[in-house]
View 1 (tube, rainbow, N blue to C red):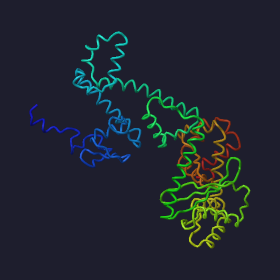
View 2 (cartoon, rainbow, N blue to C red):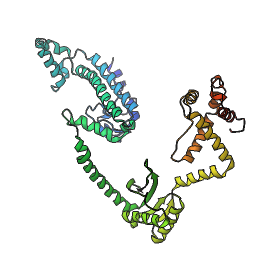
View 3 (cartoon, one colour):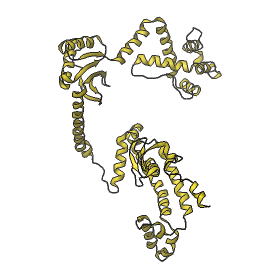
View 4 (cartoon, one colour):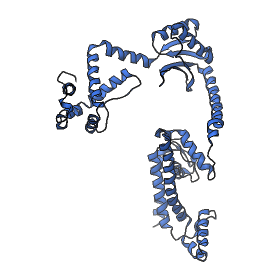
Length: 423
């Protein structure tokens, strides 16, 4: 190839050339400096180092904590393939040409040969072994070790009944990263450390964060939000949260089972929360739209002129949906028929199995935060699977079943087949 032809061939990673796949996931911000699109960190070394950052190889660069799993696997596979291709080209390079004297892995392999009485062959073998070849072999073995480690982590999740969503928690990724940085010899925390020592430190850390939020409350103001609910023991609990531009934090909760929910008592409870947060910091107080909370909010506004009471928007919408169901005749009758359909199917395992065959695993019931919202979301699902429901109730499977011969089965069949104008 002539020198002129060589000059026309532009290196893939050369400045100005954007044909490398890595440029889809990073932005050049300076001379050989690239910013990651996911964690926004800036790394020197150009696009080559960004790809190692995305693949998580930790080769002269930290791993990206925010990269999607499919992108990470894509670049790990790409870099592995490039490494294999490079090894094939340089298979006969000597160690003197490739190694800088810091390849501990190669030394370990040589020691292994020596321990088996093969030391006399090392001098003749090392000319045919390269550093990159050794790294690739180590990576293959490491892949097997990783599979065992990942399986053990998964087994811990399974045997402890831990939610799978925990792997998406940034703290989980941070934990794995810190364990890998510590290396061999990490002593796991004891029961006492988890239950006492670390817990107290975490409480102190949380209190420090709370102080940072309090500083923000003084700058921008905040909103106090109350949330009434009942636990599994039917105790009435009221949670109080504080929202500001910095974020929402949980303040505290109280057991209101023994507290009369008369207006004066509710007003006193809300007044104590305002004192705790600081009247000068509170812009509004958000509660549900129940009559006692509404009157208590108005009383509080008369006492404290600098804040407003605001009804919860979600509760207002829930009350609207409740009124639709109770006061609009068409809604009332249609929801009653909807509940008959879903109750009839979901209380019989065989019918539910048939339904999932027709809907390809999709469900008719869409649970929501409130039961009235659930009714209308279920409406949407019934309408979406109207054809599948009709196909199921007109199938040979249904006609030959014992359910089709019962009075209730005949009523449900009539509703689904729209004999009474349900749809």
